[in-house]
Length: 274
Image (tube, rainbow, N blue to C red; front, side, top):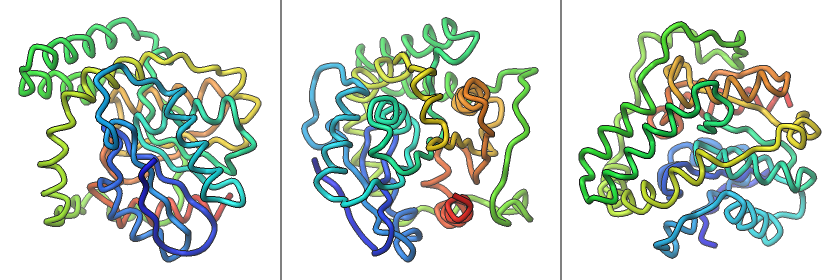
């Protein structure tokens, strides 16, 4: 399995969301490398571009294989979106192989009371992608993931560090030329993600009983700018279902990519408490 590595210190494994390209987390990894040995994993979708449905259990086995190959001790795993769903699967079956799992906005539909409605919305995304209409698929995906749910209540979130001070006046960091180039290349992977990852991952069954047994190793987090949106609601429901606090971090669903400096600061503050 492909990966990128930098830095020295306690082991930290990053699992990207979306298609699973490690380049999307380069900015975050750079900021963390001064305190950790940071490994960013690449998914099968990037390395082999399969044309069949992908599943979190298999991706969790890939992550376990990388952990065994690279680390002499269980790493902290920080994972995003689809990568966070992979990490929940890993923690369910191999909790002792992870020191701590920080899962950022895993969009698990089964955690939500209106799961059927969200499943229909995401099925429409996949249908558009399979018809070759990527613009429509992208529009439907944005609508499904970011339309706030009115009247939703959440557990009182935790915050670590001082990133919240003056946050309302800040803006996402401008993308580097390398990130702009990467996003252009990732468009080639978008059809594969929408057709073969989106539904199998978001509809994956999670075992709350098994996760409850490993709850001391799990930290559900969500972006402050995602409040009311599907991924935030799922992270909040996971926290509530396991009797855990929800921790807010900078940005929205793409916070680690759009605000890598602030996100890294909040994450380091969180890890210092653990």
